[in-house]
Amino acid sequence: SSSFADFQAHLHFCYWNRCPLPCAGTTLHGCGMMGRFWDGASCQDAVTGSKCDIAIEWAQQHGIHLHPEWYPSLSEHSNAREFQFHLFKAQQTGLQDHGCAEPCCHDAVPGERCHDDAAWAMMYGINDPKFNHLYPPSLTNTSAFEEFQAYLHLCYPDRCPEPCADTVVQANHQGGTVSLDCPDERL
Image (cartoon, helix red, strand yellow):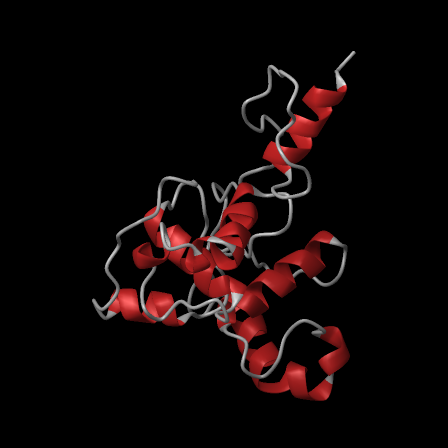
């Protein structure tokens, strides 16, 4: 019972840049899809000395070298939260239980609003004279996606979770060298 314009508006709002806004009138003015935001309500970073912490330490020091095929998206440079997320996801698929909860970080994925906003900032905002002054000097159009997500997390922690990877933006913010002149026109 939805019109073509409603469907096109859905694709525009829920999947940024897949479709332009429709020319015809529509009642949709945003994305009401479930799952557009990460819910970190049950997250918990590994506690020092816990079963999960011991598994992370083994994976970082030994597992990645002995069985790199077990950690296809990780490297010896990945941090503890990235390893914790991998172990958490493996538990969900029925592999060994390491007692790892979902870490309090999340790498935004396509379809989530944070991903859409970070992708827009990376492709358009950083290059647009109306917006580019809002981003810290460490962000350029060649910066990694996680850097944009980290900046948006600092600006909008309720809308954009902290990425699991370590970023220059996070390090500079902790060191007091990133000003938060957050963009809000697009977002």
